[in-house]
Each structure stands twice: as structure tokens, then as C-alpha cells.
Image 1 (cartoon, rainbow, N blue to C red):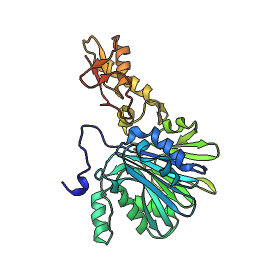
Image 2 (image 1 turned 60 degrees about the vertical axis):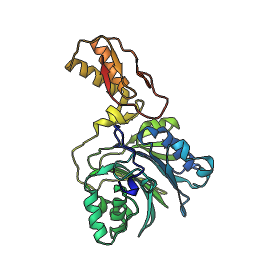
Image 3 (image 1 turned 30 degrees about the vertical axis):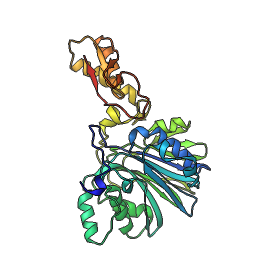
Image 4 (image 1 turned 120 degrees about the vertical axis):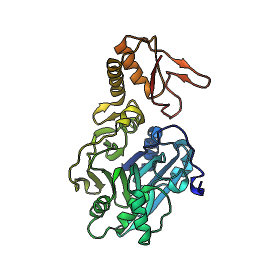
Length: 342
């Protein structure tokens, strides 16, 4: 095992998603970003980070651990500015250590930029080898840094033009948040594999992986960022660009089944309602002779409830040596994410 892999804790849980949050034009941007990441803690418990700017200097704070442990009051005070982006991470690509914590920062021809990524690039290793052969020096093993290098090497035009050219070279799933001294930018891949929601908090624009983050601060949900869309927020307002050719929508079903919080609305549907409907459909397609339906928390509760209703069976809790099943967990974790009939 290499030194950078020593922090990687292997387990049987899905590690295929992260949480993103962005805020534009708020006097306490870092504090709002903290609240947003706290609401998205279930999407990543390995590391947390926030980048903020006052339009001139960049400030970044990130560390391994949960949001509440990483960001003390003193640490948040080191993040001044009216705009910020944040990230909670599971290691989808690259090992679990501080070098891979996000946002990742760098400098391009357009100035400093911080980038945070939810997704997984299937050609990241190939691109990394090409970039290294051309002289690029990488500081992490994350595929997000590949995007940053491609952006820095993209020539001519605006930052959006350069970013669009850089992203034509990558394959896979990505939802991005970028922070520059003058803008916050979000991008979804042309198939829209991972979610991103746009909202309003008074005079501020808010971006989040799930609507539960907007609900926590009583922000208004405006709409989903569309597949293949670039949303740029700056002093001129909000602009939308669609530089990519249309592609088939390939939304990740595990967002509904496992990843997302049950109170979030993804792609126009409440997550709990979808899970319950899946339980109803499972009971119709695969009826079994059973006495009880027992959910394995946390994401299995909705499906178990739907199965029990459709099958006319009681649903109850189950116990093992260390866990009470069927009750919402007090921790940010999702549980095993399956339902079981017994």
C-alpha cells in the first residue's frame, strides 16, 4: 500500500458521491456554506472543505473528518468574503487523505480558481499520464485535479470557453462548482448523472447537491441545473450557457435508492416518495410468504414501508447486537441502504 493510501478505510458501503454547496453575495458566506455542508454530511464523511473570497484574496480551509469537527468558529473566521463554495467527500477516485480533500485550488490565465467535484471520470488515469508526459505536476491522486490541469492548459476566450474545451476531453460523470474572484460557476455533465439545485436566499444565489441543504436555511428552490448547463453567477447576475451537444439523460438511480436524504427533492420527485413507490413495485413483482417487513436503515425505510403497504404485512423493527433496525439513525450515515423481508 502506498503512503497516500494509508488513510483509506475499506468497508462495504458505496463511496460514489460527494456533496457540493455554493453561495454568492452573502455577508456570512462561509457560515452559510458550513450549514449547507452540514445538511449534506450524509454525502461524504471523509473530508470537508470551504473556499471563500472577498473578490481579491482566496481563503481555503479543509481537513479530514466531519463538517462540525472540521469547522470551528475560529476556522470559519479565517474565511472572509461574500462568496464561497464547499465540499464533503467520499473517495470516488483517489485515496482518502488530506491531499485529496476539496476544493482544490490553482491559478490559470484568468487568475485563481477553486474547484469542487461530484462524480467520477472514467478516463482520468489516461489523461493524467498524458498531462504528466507533457510536464504537469500533480499534488493529489484525485481526478478533480485532472480537470484543473486541463482548464489551466486551455487557451483563449473566457473562463467558460476554456472550461468547456477542457471538459470535452473528459469522460464520465461530473457536477462541478468553481469559485473565482469574480464568479461562482456550476456545470453538470451532458447526461446529468449527478444532481445540482439552484436556489435563492434573500438577495443571494445558492447552489447545492440536494434541496435538503436549501431547506435548512429556508432558501427558495428555483430549479435544477440542467444536464450540460453552465450557470455563471457574477456581478452582472446569472447567465446560462449550454456549449455541449445534447446527450441522453443518465440520472443515477442510486441517488434515489441510497445516496440522497429522504426529505430531498431530486429531479422533481421527493426521495422518500420514490423509495416508497419502489417498495410497492417490488411487492407487486416479487411477492413472498412473510410475516413481517423489517427495514435496514436508513435508506431502506421508505422501500420497506411501501412493500408492507402493498403486501398487507406489518412493518416492525429488528435488533442485532449493535444496531436497532427500523429507526432513523442519529448519525449522518445512511445505514446499509437495503430493505429486508422476514
